[in-house]
Length: 595
Image (cartoon, rainbow, N blue to C red; front, side, top):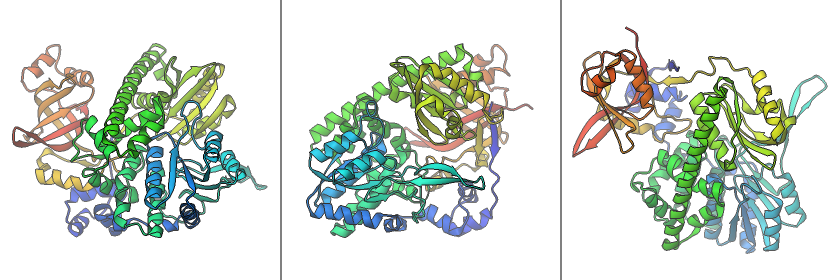
């Protein structure tokens, strides 16, 4: 069951429409995104590269820039310590390219996901020192690397931390019983992280590559590198922002919007090769393509191999090598997808067999599952069952697990209540990583469920509808106007429209895998339109058959109108085929309506 809710934010939509030359419907959608003032509307619709903020207002930016410029001027070897995911790989590349463009020397390294885990570590520091590096520059990590930073300082190296993760803190209770957070920073020479409590930078939502992007902007300005060279880095910051699932608001929206525009014209050998091997149209790369096609290929390297392969694809100028590396990454990602599907299907069988779907929080261990995949599987199970899920896999008596949560449950706080069970633990409200002994797994499951505050209402998926809108309103002009809302993603989701009282006039299953339902639907006003549904076809059939009787499905597929009354949520689009352009809707959710 799903609960459908219509957004009820109020504003003078007609005034906004007139002022910004848009339709009242578009004004309503933008207000639903939390945009209220005229200044915010202007920025949302027409913000450009000149609207990006001055990175010098970040705490320690000036100090970090001074140290980086000194390292470049003294020809020091700079060790760029990145991470193994997309954000780490791309922030490392942005810094590497920026330092080289400024005349410096640098190399990029990252930890091994399985053997070492996240962040700057002793091996990376000792290796940098043995190679003669005078400076360690972190990206997308380092804010929690207290011991590794201390070691680098003891070895006489300069350390500049750039990161975007939450600051480490401990809680203390004062004499009056009030809890206070005591923040702790690594003892680096400069710590650039917009989430620092003492950082005045107004936008806290940059990814690691976004912070690196800001540092390179200052480096280029200090070294006299042309602004056009800085803008060449936009596609790389954009890919990292989308792939790291950052909110596409404020500066992130501008970086992604203009980065994707430039990606269509990019001459970079590695990205060109990967786009080609992924079968994408290089002239139109959307945030969806980045999040679900390009990003996973770069992530696959860190999951199933090492991040070095992904870094090499970005750094190479040899087109033959780029083709080879791109093909390898695509193959790795295909293996990752196949392994994920197998793991997910095994998990579903286990859950259904043991009735674990009745638990408010699902906790399970998958034998013989690659540990880098448990987080992806947990995320898919969360979507299927709409409840928090923790999935682990065992090696030598220790379970390494990842959790994914829903909005109504703070996973970090829930797990903090039983942290004595863990060997390692970290995370935030929506996700967590942990390891524990096998014998503690059932204790963890019982504790979480016995102390879970979730209600049945919390466990019901909510579909947020932007506008109840009849088919009559849809036009090619309106569909073109919706492009002003792009790019879509977290924090700026694609609008959801809805209408009640549809009939299915005819339907057929299409697609290579027979997984798409193509229909002609008609509303109460008699307006007919083509509709596509890419979701759960058996569930749709079950809904329709419920009102048709045993022969219902045959009647639908033979072309007769269904007597079942349906409500749809949808998104309008254009269908271009054989030189003809026709209106259509993409159905996202459906309900049977009682008359």
